[in-house]
Length: 231
Image 1 (cartoon, rainbow, N blue to C red):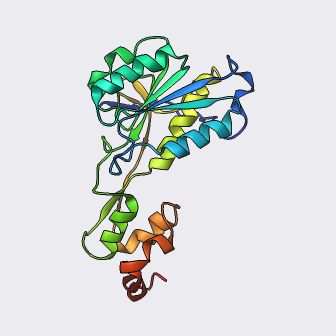
Image 2: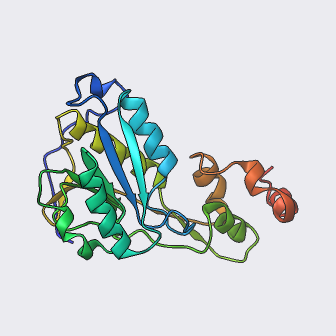
């Protein structure tokens, strides 16, 4: 991916009620999810995304479309979202190259996780595509704790989801977000994943609220936590 740092500008999107001046009575964000049932897919936290939109725009609503891993279904959902008065689309693509008809029109498109060519904005990772893992963050962390895996990769899914929500709301407010960096011609905000080992489970995952110490140190891992001095 080609990247060029854009001039820095404040991303003035946070918490103040951005949307007292929305264009319609009920501005709508269409959130297109690749596969909401796949626990290894870590590009979006739907609950965090929805909460963020609702916290920054009293009148806004989020419509969630789940493609269940099927690219053809997602293309159909794109058409459905456009036809049912979506004001901005945020998409976690099943196949980024299969959504060419989504971009280039009047409807703003924000890609999340993987870049859909021609998107208006993009939120992703510095290292490229969001890595998959077997199971949830909690399951992966417990595997590391038990020594079944040396490490896991933590993806800041919540932060990415909230940033995508902020960008969507900025479009609804008529003041599209700026201050990102250029990735293949698209203004982008790139987050960093982290390699987490047994020594950094608490300083990364617990400290950032991804999971609790009780979650991590229960059942089969309780004695291991005690031996390691985690509790």
